[in-house]
Length: 309
Image 1 (cartoon, rainbow, N blue to C red):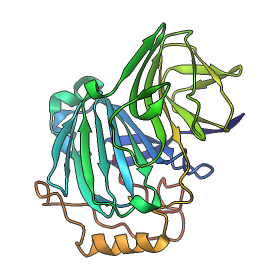
Image 2 (image 1 turned 180 degrees about the horizontal axis):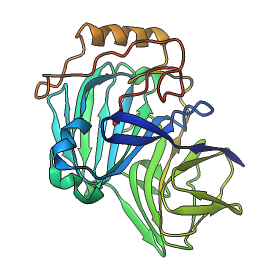
Image 3 (image 1 turned 120 degrees about the horizontal axis):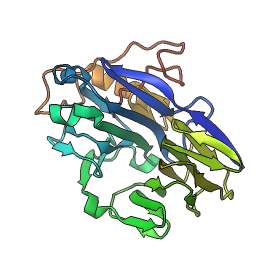
């Protein structure tokens, strides 16, 4: 059966940059190891306002950030000294592990013209044994990500395994993550073999069990249920899920299986023990104030995550 329908909520991550936040949700914190999901754009702004959209250096622990673009481009810089421009169809997979800082900047005015910029960002929680792993970063080109096509169906495997497809994207637990495009009337099903499964309607609309669902909604299904998804119009879906990792705590940009580890991360960032990107170290996001009651758009009562990542 359909477990839950999650409606994306508006969240502001800076001047001129509003996103649709899907995960975490107060009634459903995670789907498999996925603990966070934002959909940004399409964004159309004047080139002179682009710097206001930049996501300044900020920290993460205990997770991997996964950036995937439909359009535009973003420049990533991190504590490891990596500087990587991500373009549509590529995957930026950054494993924070014991702690990393990074920024995401919109430095090409042409990439913002005409409402081109559009991206999906997810966070994947790490298994307990990997939460303190050394930070790492990988960029994967489109040719490294297998594509499957059929009548009315196009899909790219971003990470994990599904439908007999697999790729070399380095993951830490069993999962699947796909970009799927359906033509009008196309019928599609979720991959089997994973405990938790869901899909987010990025564009268009679908019908499942006689009910219609539209852009901005995520559907999560009980194990063993194999829904038939029918596209009502040209539709883009993001499919994700995998094996659950157990309870995780999330505060701002920190994820951990232990509350005390998050407290340590707060102190580390405040005291400058998480290194800033060496090629972007002149400004950063300060640690938010810690309030005991819900703040901003956070469904957890914590400061809203510093998305895009």
